[in-house]
Image 1 (tube, rainbow, N blue to C red):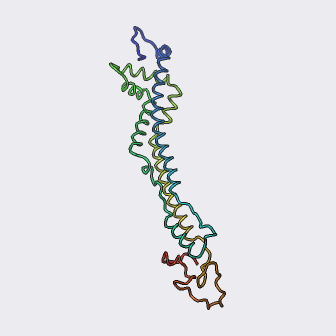
Image 2 (spheres, rainbow, N blue to C red):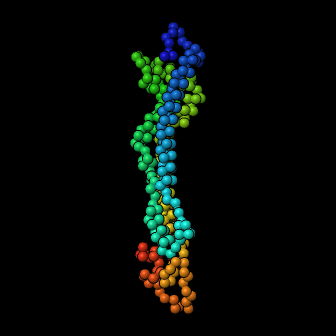
Image 3 (cartoon, one colour):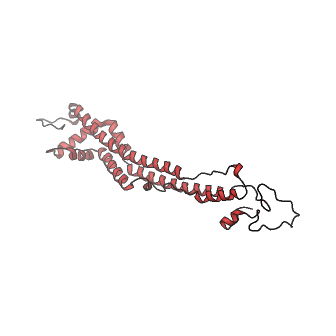
Amino acid sequence: MAYQRGTGFVGLQQYLGANEEQAKKMGQGITDQVNTEGQAAQGAIDTASQAVEAQAAAGTPTYEPLPDAQNLPGTADLYNYGKMQQATYKGPKALGDVADTTALTKQAAGAQQTAQLAGTDAGRATMLAKSAQGSYGLGARSLDAYLAGRGGGQALEQATSKYAKLQDYLGTAEKTATARGERGVADAAAVQEQYRTAPTLPLTYGGGDRIRNPIQTPGTMPEPQPGDGSYDLWDRLTGKKRRT
């Protein structure tokens, strides 16, 4: 403890000078505590955010067109229909899907409180009281808190400033995760639309692969019928026409 009894009055600046090493030691100890708790809390939030991004990317479908060599009438419709059905977003839609947000909130709140306490003489006195052993009066705590603040200097100021709003940092991470999930759902819908409208070879008239429809006199071409090669298989799969 930096405080020592004396028989006469000693100014604070003189007292600080006489106890400079002890002041630096206390200031460094408080700075280390702020950094240790702050880094752990921020790191846990960052890890969860990175997991959201990685799982969202893995859970978002991509368009995979049927190779042209296999793009035969009917076959392509079956392929595209199956792919469209599978093209759903399977990634996280919130930060809570990859991490325990209750635990993250508690950790962030604790580290933020430590940073805020370390930023004032009164707060440092509270921190010193929690770690003190034996009798440690208010006067001694207050003086030591003053010394610790001056001894910690710029490093302490930077640490307290950096981690004083960790709960806001967590809130931003939660909003970002939700937005990423919404983007994944939208991207999956776009891929579904690609499969729905994917170009394929024209179906043949009267069956047979890669046989062009015969030229008909305008207005005399027969209507396609179910079972006819020109009948769109997609219509039969979905009950609605895919394209004109």
